[in-house]
Length: 459
Ligand SMILES: Cc1cc2nc3c(=O)[nH]c(=O)nc-3n(C[C@H](O)[C@H](O)[C@H](O)COP(=O)(O)OP(=O)(O)OC[C@H]3O[C@@H](n4cnc5c(N)ncnc54)[C@H](O)[C@@H]3O)c2cc1C
Ligand SMILES: *[C@@H]1O[C@H](CO)[C@@H](O)[C@H](O)[C@H]1NC(C)=O
Ligand SMILES: *[C@@H]1O[C@H](CO)[C@@H](O)[C@H](O)[C@H]1NC(C)=O
Ligand SMILES: *[C@@H]1O[C@H](CO)[C@@H](O)[C@H](O)[C@H]1NC(C)=O
Image (cartoon, rainbow, N blue to C red; front, side):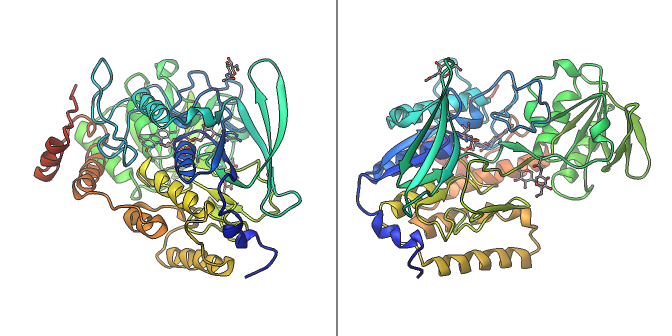
């Protein structure tokens, strides 16, 4: 083990009253705050916005001057977003997302505001708000001077001018989410296109698309859901997809056959854009278009990290990160919660938060930096051997339980919950337009719901 590395510091950090800075007060940051406090650590959560909840804190007015989100973005929720997994499985392991009655949205897949209320309740129930400093944007995180002491620079603005602060912490937990930097395709003619173009992050309501011809680029969940919403008001929707037989595109084709929408068309990739408003697709077909919406996802981005390239983002692989959490050369005083995708939230960030809290408090030991580095390399090599592209390095979909058990002894999920996840996942692939309202539970699920007293409403 290297003597200069802070990795020897799992013991340095073992005493209590260590100060930990958590960046971001979304589900991941709040989960971290709770677990760190449970281990007796002193926690400060810095959040740039004027409320908690991260993506779920709806922002009705995204920056109109930056529709492509080049300067970075905050919440990307649009008005009609409903949960895409059943509320019975969405919740912290010990704090279920029960329907509350009293005029709230008690459906299995409620609207986003209902989930924000749940996050706020969680925060209140565990008294986390006094750890959170709002309106505070972290601008620089660096290890100046002594190893394993972090300097965190932030700017606070409560509407009365900006104040810059520098503070020192024993550990930093990054929980800033996946959706701060929109990813844009490189399409010939994009730069000189004079009609409207936006990234999906700035889409909120369908009104301004009425009567328009719209091209939606990207046939992932967001592209499909926007296409289905906009087809009700737009003249025509052209959904452009990289590959006709990959991902969710086959599910979309099935839907088109089933419902015979006359104004929604699947198109191949865009070949180029012309100044007169023409969009030319691969193969030569073209349409004249009013608006292009890029549903092309996001890049991981940590503009505040000043750590000599010890963690890099390469084609959406953040690394090296042991178990997607700890950079071997800076562990355990720097960690990341919420990097994986295709996971069940908030349960997965609860697992990672517990892992971090146990390690930072000294309760659990990490392998040596060399062993951690080797584990990361092995993980990446096995993904590559299985044909998983680099940008999918952090997909953890089928390894959820094994992961939790391995990193912090987290209990496995009950069989009925797993079954419910699969039922709704299959429902989504079967009919992405209706699966949230039209579903059928198995006997196992029905029995469990009865036992646990779940009564969701159907509307
Ligand atoms: C349209 C849409 C629909 C979605 N639907 C679902 C769904 O149905 N189910 C589901 O599970 N997930 C869904 N998601 C994913 C959603 O992002 C996660 O559920 C969840 O928000 C992840 O939590 P997080 O805490 O990791 O990140 P976030 O919620 O993104 O929180 C990160 C926080 O960090 C703050 N922050 C960032 N940078 C800084 C900085 N420099 N200084 C201070 N603070 C900073 C941000 O302001 C934010 O509050 C959806 C996302 C979108 C955009
Ligand atoms: C955050 O800033 C806004 C103004 O941008 C202000 O209205 C609000 O009171 C501030 N909140 C806190 C907790 O400082
Ligand atoms: C769709 O996007 C999500 C989140 O950005 C990602 O996890 C998923 O792998 C993507 N799916 C496809 C088929 O590209
Ligand atoms: C996102 O990442 C990709 C792949 O690394 C890169 O080519 C692209 O320029 C990035 N896009 C933005 C907007 O940062």
